Length: 128
Image (tube, rainbow, N blue to C red):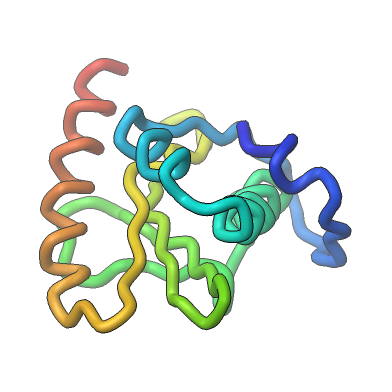
């Protein structure tokens, strides 16, 4: 999905099985609003997810606690800003990018983001 954005980045991260990566409308809208540098930084980590699938681990990915679903987050640093992309794997083991955000100075980031991500994920899995 974002391969063209990160095409110039050389990845030196060996992993297992490649996965397909899809994104929600909310994710795509958020991504398009990012500046070019942040898009490149997010694209680089999304490409790592595509390459590594479920094997992508910390510091690039981690589980989100306190959610009813097995949600994870991509952990991106962009110009010193901690950007997060909430995602999950569907029953086919494809990755679904749910929503993104910048958690700089936002002490309620997870509280707000997780409830929105759960709603979007619930809608996605009910369609499948």
